Length: 389
Image (cartoon, rainbow, N blue to C red; front, side, top):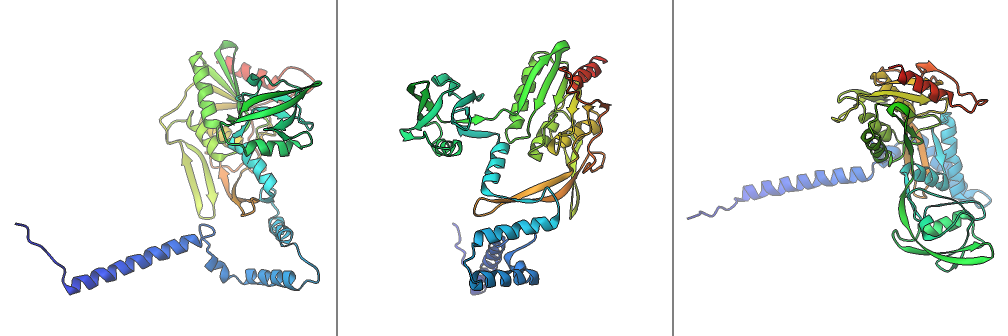
């Protein structure tokens, strides 16, 4: 027999008090987080900021009492730009919606479309790898004049692209083109297309060649597939070409470094207001073959993170010229109208503790690219160093 147990009046009061206390604390945390602007500041903090109150007083006076109408959006854009001008740093800036959209598309590493490049007359000038437009019967030189029976003959390339982007993924699109004197219609599927960020091939003596053009969101998978292909074909050593690679996502550089370094090795460190934090390889994956990196004066940012990670940990030698020297990390914050602010939040340090900002990375084998010869002298030097054993 189970004896029923009830609660005394005292116990009920205690439960009610505890429940109310927990609810109050939880509500307070939720409200606090909803009002948080950054990791350290809330709207309440800013309400006590005397300087901000002065700014708002000026703003209110101008929009309410200035003798002509004021475009609030343009005025605030100017004010935001003035804040970044005060910082006096090239890497911290305000970006319009179009500029931020363009940057996001480049770094995303994928887009929705039919897989063609167009000139200003909406003529097809190239078919992109991974797209299916070429298989549909479209040809280079075709001028797009219609999409799903919408007249596109007078549209700009940007307007035409916007229509395609707004069509659902995997939906078939009717494309009308002008080819000579003929008007032809084709059906093309709107697909998600990975933008190639790498080129890979096998050179003589089983030397692999991997060129990385940008550190996009899809780079990790692309490099994994490239290494798998090269290693399957008995690659003995590797040249990583980072010339003219101006960077991208820091996380993409970390992912690639993970593929080569031993677990526990420092990839880079961040020097923030709160102190220095080390970022290490946490994977079991590593590679032991010889690596040569090609760099030049346009190799920057995430490129330099990967270069220094492999060099300082004894995994690679460098051929080329001194790199760009961008040793700062930016954060972005998208505003409600789609524009974006980008600002420096930290310095990044090499595994050896050095900051390369405005200094760059010095190659082990300095050699300039000679534009007067057809030979790629930097690549030839890399091959020479590898073949030396």
